[in-house]
Amino acid sequence: MLKKRKYFPNAPESMGKKYYVAQHHPKAEDTNPGTENLPFKTISKAASVVDMYDTVIIGAGTYREQVPLVRHGHLYIPESLITFRAAAPDAEVYLKGSDVFEARWQNIGRGVYKAKLPKFLFEQGTYNPYELSGVIDEPGKVRPVKGERLQETLGQIYIDGEALEQLDSLQSVKNTPGSFVVSADGKEVFVHFADGKIPDGKLIELTIRERCFKPEFSEFKGRLFIQTMGMVVEHAANPGAFSLYRPLTIRKNSGTGIIVRKILSVPSNIVCCTLLSSQISYTSKNKANSILISALGISKDGGRTWTLTKDSSYDYFLDEENGMLLRNFRKVVSDVDRDDALGANTYEYLQQISRNEGKTWSEQERVDLGNKAIGFRMLKLQNGKLLWITGENQGEPGFYSAIARAWLGTWRHDLSDIDWKPGGTVKAEPRQSVEGFDEPHACQFPDGRIFVIGRQSSTLPTHDSPGFTSVKLFATSEDNGRTWSKVKPLTYEDGTYVYSPTSFPDTFCSSKNGRAYVIININDKPSHGCDPRIALQIAELDTSTCCVKKDMIAIIDTKHKEHYSKVRFSNWSMIEDRDTKNLLLFMKLDMCTSCPIRYGYDLNCYRYEIELPQC
Image 1: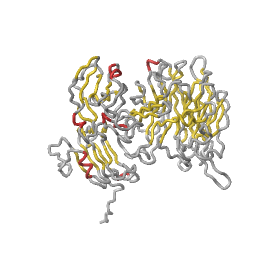
Image 2 (image 1 turned 90 degrees about the horizontal axis):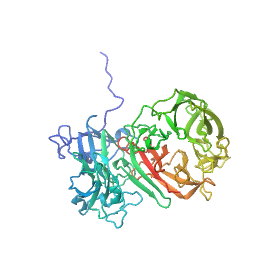
Image 3 (image 1 turned 135 degrees about the horizontal axis):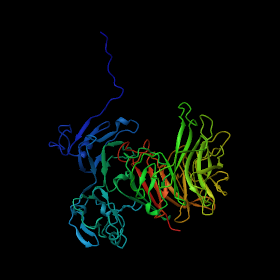
Image 4 (image 1 turned 120 degrees about the vertical axis):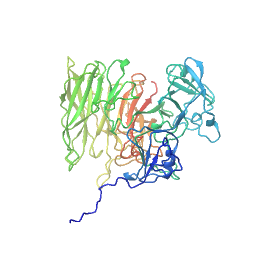
């Protein structure tokens, strides 16, 4: 008889323990051992006993609690992460920072009702979000307050899970269905229900807890490595690094006139890609039909919510002058050579045209951009031409060195297609960037000049060369992209460098105020490589010199103390809002390296509305 060798599975199912939580189980108690037959009643109890490698299996139900996190796993040992997951794919598990709001509503007219906040919120030592500021740059207590302006608080009201809009005055609430305001003394809320009356049979919830998961480590260094699966985690007042907890966060940038509003846009179970640097467009020149379309899908409400489509791999562009909608698709002609990955891919572009807002499309036509081009955002120039900036890798096998090329497009007389002709190229000198001029984006200044900014990769010093520091590079064109100036590093007005890692850059000219801006990661000192990208800024340009105005830099988003130290804010899509003329930017965190919660409730796309100053 042959001797059977010992069984060694190639990966263990779990090295840790399993704990069960089931609030509706007849024997559920927090004094139980947390087994399947004798489960805990709360997630908090399970969180107090779990350790690295352990899993908490949670039965269906709504858990209204603040779960303390006292232990966590290790980033580089995925199986060590503490997991909180639903007991089954069809088990609806909610962890909420809100309670049911059973209020006595008083009608004060014009569809507005008022109610007193729960008394326990005002007991000494109780966390009360209706007294605290919801503006990132103005933390602290803001209620009670004197004056007509009622600053937004961290408190929030939900109707069947949908957040009401918090406004700054009672008059604004009277004029806005689906809104509320916290009274000046902080004791009452005034609500304008959507249909002008108290909703019958709908769930009204009131945020009362600071967090859903709350770290309670004695010394916190951005190491919160847990994962959530199959759960909905929502409605907390002050989420820390994780904005899915709140429908809105506001950042004011003093002195710049720029305000950034951040909301959850697309949950992670809809969009799985971490890079969203696709072209986003309206579908029609009709402003009453402001439908956005991009890799995110289709949005009918200015990008607040999205419906996923099958065409998520396309880039879009609307020529508003003639109402023609374009979409193009980059097709990989040859696969990556894994032994010689850099410079091995070749592509072709296929383009289609729609005359009816994307309902039907023409046959795919090949656009001859060469076999190495990667297309970035299109522009409609003041002379009526289309400008399409592409990047090309012209390096030898095993070496990446990019250039940017302008392509000039002219509509045929019958609008059946676009004839593209090559314009000028933008090249960085070898000493300026080890990878050339990459990921180019362009805008047109009011005086007609075109500005293009590109990603640079710093060069290290050697015996024969001093090297070149980490910056962004730019060039300009005075003849609509046919020729370009020499590439220069981006600087402040005083001539000092704007330090930036090897990362995605962007630029645009606002139709609201006529000013030009760049959107980049700005650091306070030089770096080498792709990091850090721990802050994303928008900065106004002096269009006469193409320098950044140091006193006109505003933060879009930045690292929170609970984020992983190498969090990345990068690779976004953006478009100007037709109605407000503000900039809309859509961005995800880098899933692989940025998020301390490796899987679960923070792997989402966020919508940033960047309110710009008037002219």
